Image (tube, rainbow, N blue to C red; front, side, top):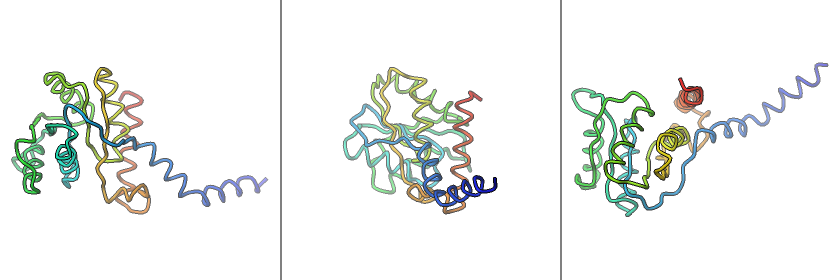
Length: 190
């Protein structure tokens, strides 16, 4: 009787790395970039990796302009203004960017505003840049809200994700947990 549960525990322990890796891949759905009408950089990055990835893609010719989302001010400045200044300090021209400063507190709200901007600009193809572990949920939300627009999700790297070995560091575990909870909430519509 005790042999089956013991065997199950042993298998879980032996294959825990592969299981955890697999769980992490459920949060990632990024793709190589392709030519688009616009690049959208999602808010929520305090490291500058998303804005630099978006700027790099525009510099490589994937799209002519980068729409920078964000809203709630922090210390009197919005995330788009700080992100654009950061990109300019890294050598990208300021006229490459368009500020989309709106108070949003979720990817769903952000997507609604971004899609309205895309439609006003007549965009049919968009690259959405976010953190790698956020690409699957963000892609589902954007595609659900605008099936008429082709979205390519591109993930910026984040050290805490540790190239998929997220469970090996405390920050990675926190990121995984929060994104997993948000993914479940999105599936449930809450």
